[in-house]
Image (cartoon, rainbow, N blue to C red; front, side, top):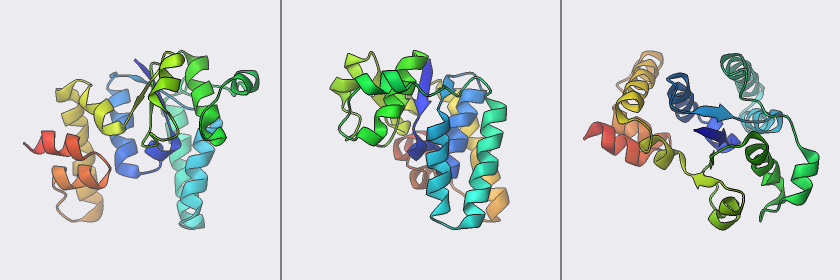
Length: 177
């Protein structure tokens, strides 16, 4: 499976680590564009220059870890596509150009299922996307992310609460139960 990761699912650290961990485990092939990665960096900039610098370092690591993930811009393709928010058309164009199966995003409003289906794509929220993958592998990835969050924070990080804060409440519930 090939899935475009929208900037909104790359920006939050725990969510990104679970998604990319699942990709590293071979559960799917992640895709993005330079523009999607730049949106991630700009989102981090709102928290200050240090956060932007950190994001740019994480972006460099993501690029190095997934050298085939980045899809070049397709202006001609973008020009023939439509979405309610024109600023998101580039994400759809990346998915179409790469032959992706889905776009993983929290932004359901701007990626209507009908418009996605017309392009042969699914729009999936990250919670549903991860729950549809191999449960054992996703559980191992989530546990590794939880352990690292606990190590970095010096505080207990129960899996259900951590996943809920990351926007993955159903995954957290499934893993805790």
